[in-house]
Length: 494
Ligand code: NAD
Image (cartoon, rainbow, N blue to C red):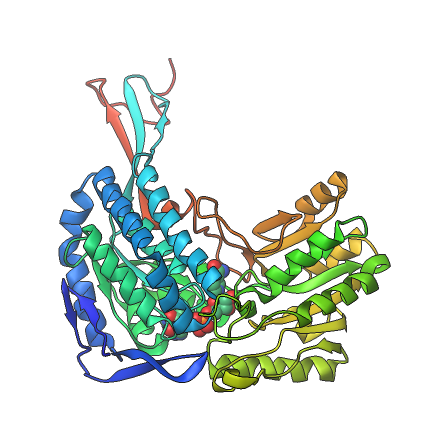
């Protein structure tokens, strides 16, 4: 099946008429579909449409746009199973998780429905008499949204819903690894009542379509989720036209386990955190930092449990871990296995492609544990984005904090302990945007801020009420009802 871009209220081919093919990573002879290989001229048309649609869309009351988001949530709910299956075929994660991914989109839409009635401004005392000071929140204009592939419904929804609710129009470029989920999300937005030109979908590569979005003078804000490398490039290009840029980038998330922890709970946590989504989450647990007195016991329990993880096609309900998303990702993970071995870490289990039966046709990889990892090794510092866990031994909480903070990322973190004092001290000292106590590094809820420190981003937070700060401008208004000229800072006495 050949899919199209959606520009100015119509489904259209890319102007070049060229396409790219997306395949199922669990079974690479299965084609998901053909999608337009768009170019800068397609982006221009999308921006033109978004510009024309903007005045009417932003003039609507916030609650009217909220009603559309409510309908969008209802439609996502009605299509949940269909969307989950598309996601699984498209990028590989298991059905249980893709259902969760769609649910996050649903939650985001319903949360927006409520937020539409809470676009609060401030009423602030003036330094002068007979004068009123207020602030309003207004849309920025056209939002350029660029998403990755690992949450093919949730991340587009995290961006589309607040951008639209705030009154912006949108040019949306999804990842080439998840174009069908994005297409379905846009279809449902249209069915929910988003008018012509308000949402424009342009498929294609980051280096062409993405770059055209970054440099387009009509786009006022770019919201990006992806790798640090691309994030840096985005900040650089957008800086030239002084766009607002929100960057949600990578992670090297650690789970600390102290000697007093509930070990069973800690093992459950790390299994879910490290191998869920085949380790391809920005919040995946890729470092397990363990107090030395329980290190051996924890490692052997973990090894036992990891061996039982069922690998295969995520459409099968019994399967617990699907494939990596692409050949490129598979090659990257293999490369890190070599790096880990060369650095002197001990390969406890996994470390190779999984090719049993039908899995030979896909990009499957065995869940992998490295032990005896030291904080200076590359496998302890760099984002691998695969089912690879590095286990690091520490003497105590102080060393654990030093290790967990000793990387350039700062997205998610976790500590397992039953000692409330230690947990709260760790909370204070961990350098990460998100900290879980007695929970794994994954599990964000849509109504809380999401994002990280250091190289994980540039200070914005998606999710919750904070995402609306990304997509709105503040207008400050002074109303003088004194009937005379009053000068601030000068006529303030008496
Ligand atoms: P990526 O950076 O390769 O691509 C992300 C998107 O950017 C894609 O749509 C891609 O086409 C586009 N792109 C690439 N080059 C571009 C350019 N020069 N200009 C504009 N757009 C460009 O990342 P990915 O492989 O799709 O996703 C994996 C990465 O995303 C990981 O590093 C992961 O940690 C990160 N991620 C972060 C979060 C978060 O919220 N912090 C969530 C999910 C994934």
